Amino acid sequence: AGLDRLGSDMLGAVSYGLSNIDGDTAEWARNKVENEAQWMANLSAYRSTIGDTANLSWGEQLVNPHYWSAQLGNFAGNTVPQVAMAMSTGGLVGGATNVGKIGGLLSKAGLSEGLAGGGATGLGKVAKYGSEIATGTGLENLQNAGSIYNDYRFAGYDTNTAGSAFEQSLNQGWAPAALDYVTDRVGVSGKVGMLASAFAKDGGKILAKSILANAANSSLEGYTEAWQQAIEGRIKGQDGYDKVSMLDPNTWTDDMNTAAKDAFNVSMVVGGM
Image (cartoon, rainbow, N blue to C red; front, side, top):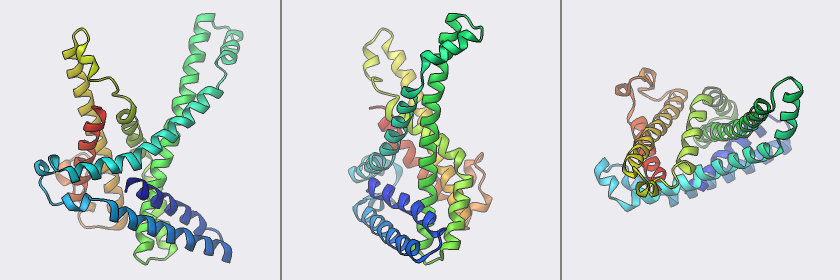
């Protein structure tokens, strides 16, 4: 279901692009893309079991297999492909960065061999991780904007109204998208070997620190999901979102709290693997 939703949202972004091109061919292509996006959204809803557990209490959800199959399936299909693409981009950029050549240029600029080598290695890492974060952030933000575009189009709004919502989401979504990608990245790849550390010297302390770090990362993941929900709610003019302050959880809507809770739960489980 997660992969279907990812495909539908990305097709929404493509539809927005086509809506800005004049001509019968572009309109025909947009209609085809929107029909495919609608089909994938319907397929995602059909396959997902999220609705089956939405009204359960937090404690009941934690012991319900349908809850976990839905949340982990959504994470695997939605988040992992984006992280994999971003990491691949970072790897390509990092591999293409000629650290040796950069070090030589820094040496010619007057730096010592050690400083030049260290500086070149640092710049190589900046190129690698900078391009990875930029790619991951862009994909996350584009998906969120595409999702809002689809929501408007599926509800019968014209392309101008849907396009305006897309642009608002894109413009407002960069900061939470960047934060969301970083927390997703840590959740996917940053906790491997956490349990094994319990068997090392002072392993209990290391494990405790790892669990606390995982909880902190998961809390941040929940916060960013609530933030993105707040942006969507404001754009759509939904009740209660005009009073929301991201610094005051007491003002958050039910949808924001649900998004934060689900993201925290999944991040804790995935981060502990």
